[in-house]
Image 1: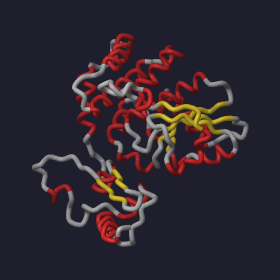
Image 2: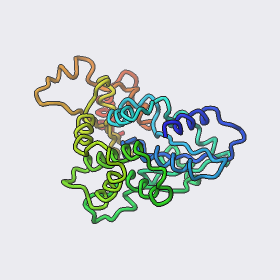
Image 3: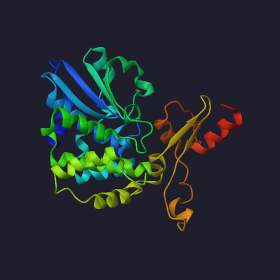
Image 4: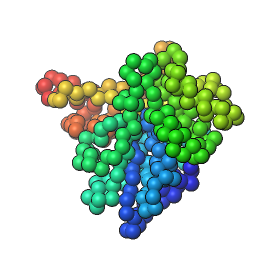
Length: 299
């Protein structure tokens, strides 16, 4: 699996003119652990079952500079000894050029729509793996992208499931369950987890994985104040006004001055605009100031 990622990046950075087709697997901009692990795994699966001449690439739908925000994702990949240097980020591959050349196919994971700047690539989409569309709305816990990908591999090529792959998918499924705040894992998820655990009895206990994921989920180790606020940045918009909202997890006892020293607690205007290309702030303003001015002017 690791060699697949390394080889894929090398080929994508030095693309041969003889290459006939490129099949890109890409997730949403949220780059959550479930969609990212599913993206890697499904691209690996496609690489093994696709005909010769097709390059299958997992692409992270964010710029490389933003990957530091996703602490839980980085931790899992580090645990699996998967180097960040092997990943292909959205700003490192020209999908529009590949599409214009008639070489591009796309599988969407964790979302049924492309980002706004990639709308012209819709004709290249050949498959969608989205638990929102494929799950029973009455089921307490909606299936994860990882479980959908795992089911397809078990059906089409079960020999590809190694212990390392099982460890990655199992952690992703458990993390998705944690974020859904459901009291117990659904029967469908329990069934798929049991298959992995029976096949690979040396996998770490679930409790150990959950404890590590919980510790990592809210960790901001290695992030600056600005990166911490941008990590969970959400944008609300009515079509005219855009409001940026960030969340920072901390103990109530933590002093605001300890976390946000004077002059550092507002997110830089340029950093915000790099994440929100449609938002415009006047030079010298902070995001908060820009938002307040927009609200006052109705813009």
